[in-house]
Amino acid sequence: MTHGHIPSLTSSIRTFAQARDWGQFHTPKNLAMALSVEVAELTEHFQWLTTDEARALKDNPEAKAELESEVADIAIYLLRLADVLEIDVASAIRAKMEENEKRFPVHRARGRSDGGKG
Image 1: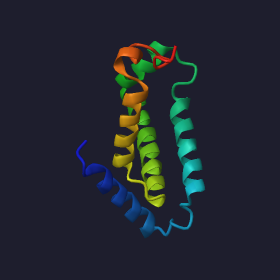
Image 2: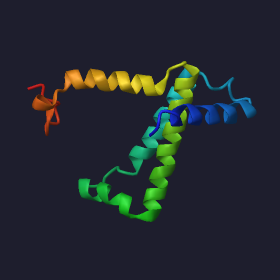
Image 3: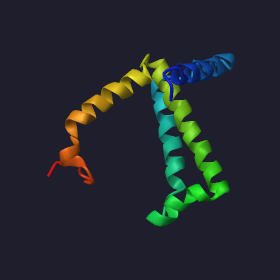
């Protein structure tokens, strides 16, 4: 992803919401709640599946299209929430990855689900 994609997507989402006068509804609380609902909808696709069945969803065109739609909904709400909160998503991700590099050094975390804490 190039540096310019996130701001461009954020701008498109903002324009879409403004054209519909949705700013009045796009409070941080409402957007966080909507984001949570969308994540739950994504999770629902994996409910009761084995690990192998869940991995295989990407090979089923209909299932993959549904997953893509859910991921898009999540991304839209996340970018809108960040926009309303004036958070630079790319900068926040870079800062978090730097923090994670320190918290989970490769020599301790590689191949461990607990991140190397034990």
